Length: 358
Image 1 (cartoon, rainbow, N blue to C red):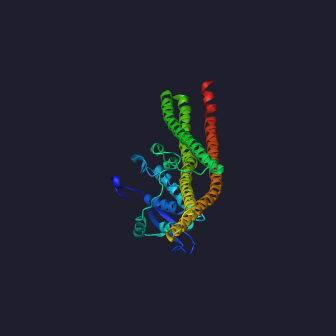
Image 2: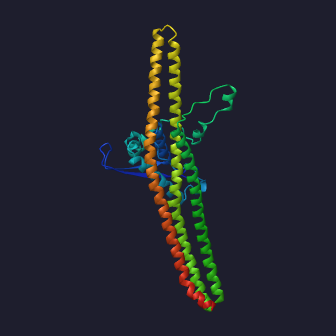
Image 3: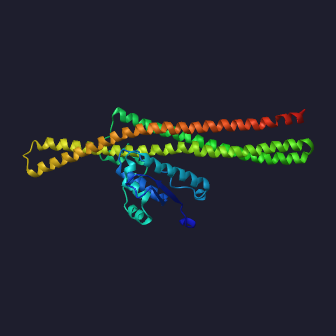
């Protein structure tokens, strides 16, 4: 919609449900990418510890932004985002999710007017493990970090998983590119060999024409397999690279909750120790009770995030195994079929080529 730099893409979101909390059995709304962003940010703000489904990247090179391929890739990724929320036992009950699925444009704009203040950059995760030079110079203590063996193992696993997934996705991208390049080369070769046959005439023209036709036919098959690799192999790997970013964002929430829990606990202990040496006054007693309540609340918040993350990790591992397994199955199946088609095509022209060479 729109023109020039103001142009944007709208998506039709169709909801079919028999749940009583929805307005009816079917609802159709129009949403922009920024609406999906709003939903993602709201869920991230409210559901600490849960791995919020990831969104596709916002930015795209201008000349590709409205290409059919880009639009289809983003549509699939947004569809996956919405459906993952819809099957999540906690997220599907979100009022923000119901607003996203049902609200008209005016109500949606009102809902979006509320800005959240959550972490939005994956790089924030790295910063929580760094000590600023100024803190060292000024003698400030390094922020305390959770250091249990289970937590260290989790952090290492997430970093390794991200690196390996990113490398696999990179090589999958190269496979897509090579298939397209080979397909284009075969198409060009097919045209060239047909022209060569026409120049030669006689029996060579017929044989070369068939070779050219086989090349052009295989070119089409290679382009189709490139699309299959892109949508059913590279993109699922890329989706899980994004999913790891969601886990890292949750680790940021966990680290912040741990620091708050630790700081308040230490402050409570310090005041309890010192107030024991002083004559209590009512105001001091009240402050101590208030601090204890804050400390207990921070501890519960941290323990809740840890418990939720453990459940989320189990769900993530199960889903990842199924999705990545399916992606590799589609990859192997497509490659096997392509190899058979190539072998059959060239095997069919071998007798004629042998007759010409004898």
